[in-house]
Image 1 (spheres, one colour):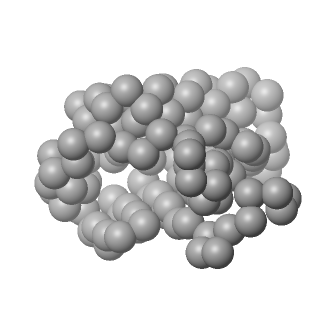
Image 2 (cartoon, rainbow, N blue to C red; image 1 turned 180 degrees about the vertical axis):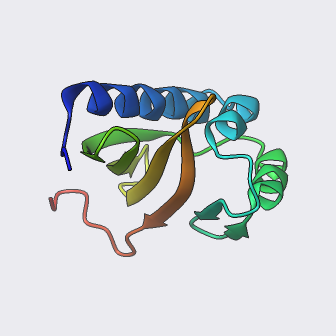
Length: 131
């Protein structure tokens, strides 16, 4: 199996960047389009546990605005041509809180890259000076 093909990494990064832009600019329709529209899609958030695209969409529709964040580190690994994991370490603006986000992405036939699983968490008692 080929690991970290530069073209695949670039494609996964483009999807990652599109998601981040939509999150920071409160575009729920774009966020929803990046997730696999399937009942098997999972998103574990900071305060929510969501199974299925319907639950994810319902959550998105309840959010008025997302907390702003600054990326500290992005790490992407690809496995073959159709599977990638993205990992983000970020800092919430104005709070010093450090968060982590993992997305599992799959290239779907005819529709391209989609997030099939995501997990977001915040470190409690975060020291912003610690790396």
